[in-house]
Image (cartoon, one colour):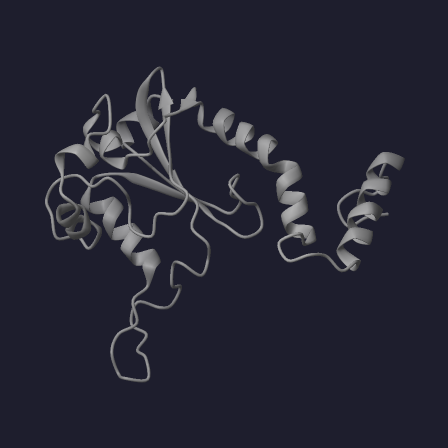
Length: 187
C-alpha cells in the first residue's frame, strides 16, 4: 500500500520502485531524481497548464507590456534604450514594463491570438521570502521579493496567481502568472 493509493496497480508499484531505486543511486550533477522526474513530466505539465488556463499557444517573445496594453507585438527592445529598460526593472518608469520583477523563464500566452497571460518561473532563491518588516544585521529592512510581485500587480491593475508546480522545472521552481481581470472574468 502506498501513501496515496490503497491498492496500487503493478505498473504503479513498479514505477514507484524504479524512481526510489534511481533516487538512492549516485548521479552526475544535474541528473538527480527531481530533475529526471521533472524532465519526464515537463510536456504533460505544460499541456495541463495550457488547458487549465484555456490558452491556445505561447507567443514567440514573452512581453508583459502586451498583456497590459493589448499590443499585437513586443516593441520594447526597438522603442526603448537599455537605460529605459533598466529603469523600468526598478520601477522608475511610468510606461508598462516588458517584464515583471524577479521574472525568470518568462512566457507570454495567447488566447485567440490575443496576449492574455504572462507566466514566469522563478526559483525560491531568486525571490527573497521574509516578513515585510524583517531587518538584517546592518539594521536595514530586508526586501521581500514576493511583496514586490504583489505591489507590481496592483500597480498595473493585474491579477496574479502563484502556482506551486512549474511546468518549466517541477520541484525547483514556482509558476507565477499575471493576467487582466477582464480576461479572467470571460474565461
